[in-house]
Image (tube, rainbow, N blue to C red; front, side, top):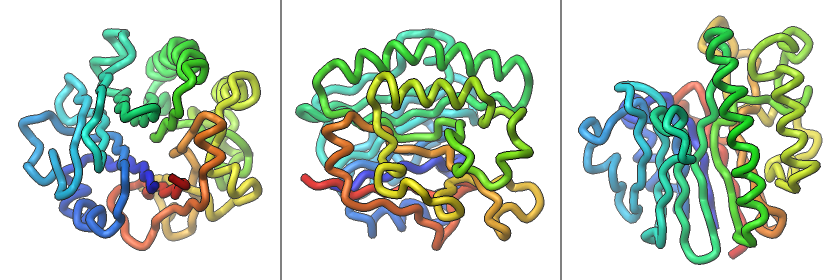
Length: 257
């Protein structure tokens, strides 16, 4: 089973850069996408339902902003849009597809880099998301949460960690929150399970400023986080960088069936 997570920074932009064509070569069972920056009326038939895949989406109310989606080989038994909080759900940040005992979630946590106000909103979302994560892991279902968490967990997850200790995405409170998910709730960071010591090869996002991409000055902020049983099925993972569809790179994980 192949699962891909990709922040597209605009599905229309990514499509013009070949994302949907590339997708047809991947034989993925699930593809979780974030930052659609589109509403339903903006989506072409190919974006809504690529050949061989069913498409499910949670759009943001604000035009050209946020939004998440999931493409699945199989039709969903159940689709859950949002977390039940109006302010979070209006930004289109959570979508869950259930097939049998498996839940696949596309997640786009807020960034706090634009202002102190947005950082406070990010903390508020994290605080309310935490008990939901606890409920998910206690459900007995296989769960994998794919997406842009907007947090680099450890020093090895970004190039310039020393200079970013006071910046959103690498703040002590954010990192401690992720540690609690792994150490107290029991979630598994699938990439780190397979590559515990990877540094420069692990990055999934590069700033558009300066020469960040050219110099690989990146951050690992895109994850597949899974319940222990499902995480144990992970066989291989890689970050696809041969083509650029956005300022993020797709994270691909292959799991045993």
